Image 1 (spheres, rainbow over the protein chains, first blue to last red):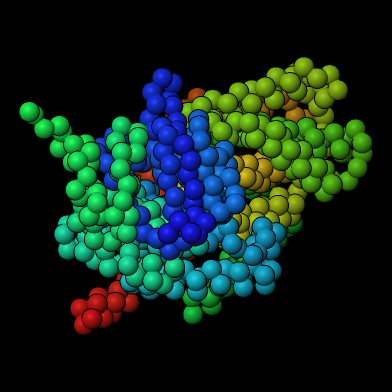
Image 2 (image 1 turned 60 degrees about the vertical axis):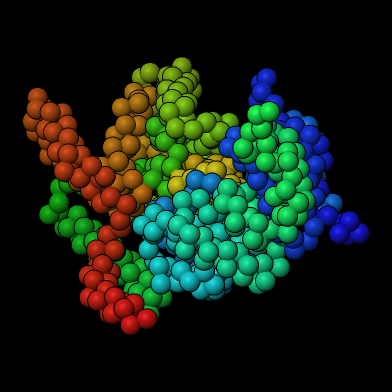
Amino acid sequence: MDKAKPLLNVENLGISFGGLRAVQGVDLQLFSKEMVGLIGPNGAGKTTFFNMLTGVYEPTEGTIMLGNRKLNGLSPYKITQGGISRTFQNIRLFGELSVIDNVKVAYHSQAKHSLLSSIIRLPQHFNGEREMEEKALAFLEIFQLQRFKDEKAKNLPYGQQRRLEIARALAASPKLLLLDEPAAGMNPQETKELMNLIALIRETFELTVLLIEHDMPLVMGVCERIYVLDHGQLIAQGTPTEIKNNPKVIEAYLGEEVS
Amino acid sequence: MAFLKKVGFFWGGIVVSLVIFAVVQFLLSNGTLDLFYENTLVYMAINIILAVSLHLIIGITGQFSIGHAGFLAVGAYASAIITMKLELPFPLALLVGGIVAALAGFVIGFPSLRLRGDYLAIATLGFGEIVRIAFLNVDYVGGASGMMVEHFTTWPWVFGCMLVTILVILNFTRSTHGRACISIREDETAADAMGINTTYYKVLAFMIGAFFAGVAGGLFAHNFYIIQPSNFGFLKSFDILIFVVLGGLGSLSGAVISAILLTVISAFLQDYPETRMIIYSLVLIIVMLYRPRGLMGTKEITSLFSRKKKSKGGAKDGQSETVA
């Protein structure tokens, strides 16, 4: 695996909020088309790590490289346009917008029609909007959301909202997709459907996926490699079987054995 | 079909507004509507421009700006300088008023749009006051005693400007650029994460809103023979804010309807000066009690027509679902 150049290369990444070192010294490599899990107890710094990758927080130490491009200090929208897209732990849809418009927003940075053409309604505008509509519909069909397309996003049931959020993240045409607890709040049936969906996404879009998740069967089932974070530091990495039997990981989750 | 329907609404709207224009123009020219009505109509159109331009900033982009009278003042003084001091034509004055206000929008918007919610409101409120006090102390534009302006604003001019304002803001809103602005209103962090340049769109919406407020300022200045800094105090900003909130945040037709309604109410209440503000306030309170999300909520007037059609077709949709 080490023969190829990693798609995402994170070196010695860390962030401090005042005196609190939330994450420190994290090294992580993602290779093309890999599915990698990031696990750890609550408060381990997983979401903070995601926020650094997507530009919400600026890391205080270390580097993030996507291909040959350094991402430190770029604003979130530039990172997204550069190829990293994400979902959120607490769903963040555009509630008052329709389902299809939510997907269209993610297409915005690829839109070809200018502001002026929209204001005076040139043919360019209609062509551009039609193209967006078609692309967005195609996405909704993959996610079986097309029958909700004109519904407001906030009126969708919870599981469908999660699906829509993933659809929206994919519409931004990322090379790397970050999923922050996609199965949170789902029942076992929905989780199973989600697992199938993620597998489908990887086949269709040939993506690299980094997944934060608490649902162990899901992580162990779909990920090829797993990184474990505890108290802001990486404590283990390896295949699911290696992680399952790693004493440090067991200790982080269950506490130390009393002797 | 959907495309035809959209075009139908568009041309329908154009035809309706041209008919309104022609009827009013006819009534004005044969003297059925006297000067009081003409003045009210002009004032109504100016208020619609102000309401719709602020609607873009607050209702669509979600930036709570309460210094809109500042842009009105900048546009009013800039256009008055063009016609009165430089003696250039009135249409140019309107354009310059808009452009100068848009520049003011950029200057105030670029730093302050980093602020959110209450902080932005306070910053824009401060801007409005700074503008007023600045004009108060500039002798070139007459200071506190004001500036004499010729009467150029006529019904065709205000109606034309109003129509252009509504069309531009409607077309902007119903495009990918408008959706970008709405996504910022809905969730700025998520919009950012979806690749929307949030600062650009916030400043852009702010500048477009300020431009049309500036045009309204030009129309306002050339309607009343004199402009004074006291015309543009923060109460004026609140008047405009009330149009938008009463109409329903996010609804353009709501902003238009409430601007019409409140202009009519306050014009007819001028006969009862001692109870005027009481009745006006009561109307506001009653509307907010019974329609807390504004007259129109977030809906547009066109959705009232399409809703009826949808509810008929709804049963069919339901059937196909159960079959599948």
